[in-house]
Length: 484
Ligand code: NAD
Image (tube, helix red, strand yellow):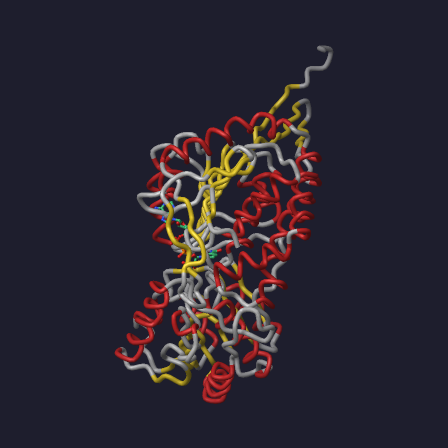
């Protein structure tokens, strides 16, 4: 790892601004220092993106797609550097990083290159009138992303934004700037026109993130993160009436029916609750299980939770990763304590593990399974964003759907059943942007992705991303016979 992370503006690294420490979540020790972009540095990043915009937007779509594809290909060449950066910042397991996070980053560039290159324009013919639409990029797009899947989530937005002809200024999370620094190096090494991709580092409120979204030269904001941050960004752009795309928090429900394949349901819920330390917006934090299988399900889920391996990131069979920061670990532990206070029965976990080695300085918490809380308890209402779920019984399908829908959030849900009719019926009754049946986190990048209620505004994915990252102009021509 480098000993400092810089910004990337106009195609070159910029080492300006005070520095802050980035810590290894596995040990809590400082691993490098990060420059914080002040208003002046943000100003220069936006100016570089603005200067690059006319040339980039004017390229034929096929040429921009070729650049976007090249970024995806170059990720393969720097694969191990990206794996190392992502692990250093997050403490993720090498297995997950190699099989999910970095390959998905490459796929994000390649998929959106294809989707953009193949997208047809539409035309409507009506007697002697022809209407057609052309799409223009939005301009300079601010990309603001969180720490949980840093590379995957940033590239999910950068890929389509670039392919649609925008230039971007990316602000990674203050906790996880490493993989964007590698991506900046990749952009420079393949000769991506300077200013098309810029990266600024720093914090959110009162810092780089706020300076970026308030900047008059920013034409749109695409943001993934907490719902209350989305609300604050919305206020920042309200006076300028700028488009926003928000992928926000969740309090996702899983419904397990008695007719489900219980082995598959238990294993599926192990993944949906504990993957990435529960730090995926799509993770399940509320499970509702039909009464006849409730006791067995809880016992088996808790048994599996106790088995999950707390190795080091470099061990291939490691499953559990640390929380991203001491602050986030303390937040998750405070919910474990609150669950006890609210009267929960704790079937697994409930605290922080002790290792007797340097990992005791890190930010680990135990995978935790709870039952017995009232539906209205804070633990059942608020997004915890850790490896924890509460399991409650239900008696009827209608009750299960009502419990799942009784949330301020509406991102994702999972349904476990062997009845095809029930699968469709329940899936269509759930007030979420995404429903998985007998699986979880299976993604086709062409499908719309996003949430309802507090979980977001708009959809990205496939042509939905291109719709957000461009504006249609409708051109209507009166065809007058006999006139040139
Ligand atoms: P966060 O909202 O604290 O921060 C996200 C990013 O926004 C960071 O880069 C941060 O520096 C920046 N930021 C914070 N305040 C800002 C402000 N006022 N102006 C501009 N930028 C600001 O979120 P987090 O803790 O990094 O991430 C966890 C959250 O993200 C969880 O709520 C999770 O559910 C959500 N999430 C949602 C999705 C989704 O697709 N819906 C995906 C991943 C994570």
